[in-house]
Length: 284
Image (cartoon, rainbow, N blue to C red; front, side, top):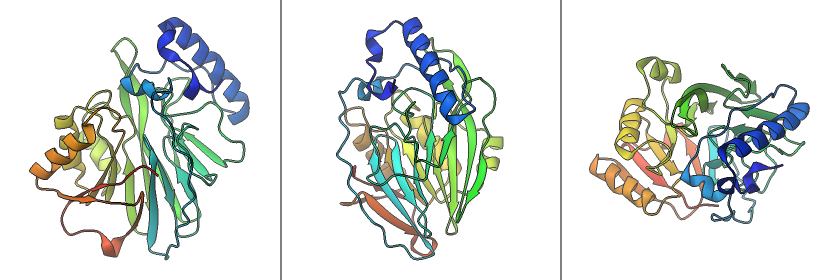
């Protein structure tokens, strides 16, 4: 069963957890390393799973990229398509609802709840990178696929009961074309000095701005200030007015605001803005 279409709020917590465990066990046969998952965290963006948020029809946008460029397309919710100069396509927080028009070669997922993963990835996807370990404990990635290095930094999430679930989320970092792009995933807490050291210098941050089920706005701004990217691209703005509130707050923090008419942004080292910038992309 694909939990992206499962009516979670109609289930008890125990029923949801049992269903999730059973489905993850089936997925384990496909991926070879999955086991039993802890129940995903309750969150309002579960509305996507109930059909309140409708996925757009996938549109194919072919990026003609130079060797120093990266294509970043906002697909929807927390999913971006990242395309490298050699044509490696990556889909972040892949949930099989918001998906690119072209099959990605790599997908990353996070386990907070089912709008950030799918139990039924297309078998044609070459690399499925989980940001959490369904058996508990670390899930570390550091791999290079042609011209992109992909690595992760695990962080904690809140469970159904409000308790901390260690290592339930990953910040995925994509190093390509002399740029470092960080997708914060379903981040629930500020970053430690050790976290920041492991992240290193980040040029572009893809940040959840819902101000509800992830970080509150003030905490998110602290994280952004600590990471200090040149560009912040908001995502996960499923709550009413959250994107607008984030943009207004960041303008007050001195960030330049750029509203794009296209969901595709072509990034390069030479065209990074001199001022720290919030770049708002429409959904593709």
